[in-house]
Length: 253
Length: 217
Length: 85
Image (cartoon, rainbow over all chains, first blue to last red):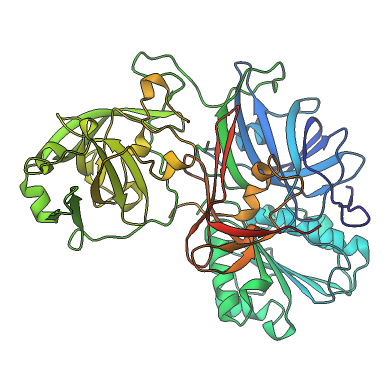
């Protein structure tokens, strides 16, 4: 597992371009998701939180593209994605069930400079809030934070259905340290011996398991459209300024 | 162009019929695309009915709904919900063709023919701008709205129009790409010139005949 | 509920037009006069093009229509964009 990197010195950031990618590894991430490692010659690395557009081309020229957050990438061209299956989807079922090592596809990236975190950019604490597979770019941020030795406190609140559905479980556990805290909320089923309540996040639980607005954290929220809008609304009601909250909705309800 | 939203680690989506490339991804075929003489060029048959929207969905109760037809003299012809239905509702079965490449065949609609609305309207102007609750606009030549070619639709497939599909009432002009069938219809304004509406300003064709594949400028 | 995304989702399409990523750039909305990052706009993806609206007032800030061999970009709802050197 590589760590996110690729931020260059100075102001110039990795430039987006189309690249031919070869699938180097596919492994199950959760019962419904896979972790894809791509080899992308010429890939410049990416900032934590960035995404890419992935394009598939059928023999008759038909193309379908989707955007995916980057879990990690290196300037050597290793790009890791974690893709959850959308049952009625056109691209994600292909990536989850069909794709195998050696297959080729195209990627356009790295993309996005707003929903990214950069080491040393601010002393303010960082609060991440993930819903389901929305954890992918937030895992990238947490891993980059850990790798950089940035001392600003970072806390990740991760709402997930069941223990089996946790993305990057081992990697998140390995990030444990004085500047990182992980809070998991299970909405359907918790591990054995779990004492915290099981069920959907509510405003009180959000307040209890996130950095308070009085500490002015920079907040990143990623998940389904409904999750993100609900959380962002509660955060504002809890006193966070809208300008401190960056969101990435990945669609759906 | 956009076919569907996506969940699951995805932050957006689009699909396109691209120019043929030498590069392909093994095993990928995408949505099934079939030949059918009722499909205009570049269209794919869909069974479901995708919701397309350029903004928040306006919530307008039929009780508060009103349709205004404004001619070049500035005279407003107005219908409330009951007034519209009193003009006479008819059933039509038509195919609809969305510019985002899907076609849905044999859709059952119920609505009021535009011929009824224009019965008492004297106008020299040849074009109409349709305005929606929520601010959407689209332009249509008057002759494309008359002679049984267009309706103010209130029901589809046996149900009152859902707000996501333009309810309580939408324009239905099935012989043009479906962006012309403005959802949440609020007013029709006669214009002297063929002025572009929302999508027509932003890259889509001024007329939009699916059989001539008039998608873009 | 209509699907909404963030201005972040414009990054791919805008990278075809701008030399650098502009989703972190701030823009002024012609509707409410507010200045905010493009990445914070609300994007409606399920439409004949991407439609970006002001998160405060719903003014249409930008549309991007992918016509295959062409792209139509409208920034008609932004009076000014701030680009960092």
